[in-house]
Image: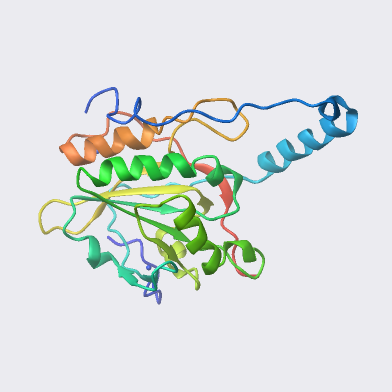
Length: 243
């Protein structure tokens, strides 16, 4: 069974403690108050920001475990290289992440996404990030800025640009960040093993970023074990579709 939609080329499973849970850097810059922050106007601005984040929330939709990874062919703005699903066939597992530059939910996790991916890529995981946002409405998510992001955060994975948005549609992706973990046995195609959140942390809930959910899933996928928990949906900004 394939996720790919008709006409889209898609030009687009351990221990209870994950290996990476204590390895990730949990530090965040503390909030520093100022005299202005005590004013009604400043409080109002903070409430407005929180309301905007909450209003932007979109949950990843259910996608059946076991479905095959869609084919894709997408450019990497940083290098100009075209990447396809076939480039990862030598790996036992593949993490596909739908992200973008501007989303506060993605910004909250960027450094830890890079650390988690780097940690597991040394253990055989393949990883790729994809931005599918419309640059008509969000030019800050354009390919030139993607290249800057990849450099700034030292992404160990290719960060690909889905200009047509057909790859996002093929994956049935709806939000950023959204995580798909595929695994394969021998020559069998990649099949979906985990579709869910990075962890329970959100930009405004004061829960430390640990990557617990995703790292537990990767541990299981790489060790051939069944997933011992029910995945929670990923939460983030909606993908910005072309107007």
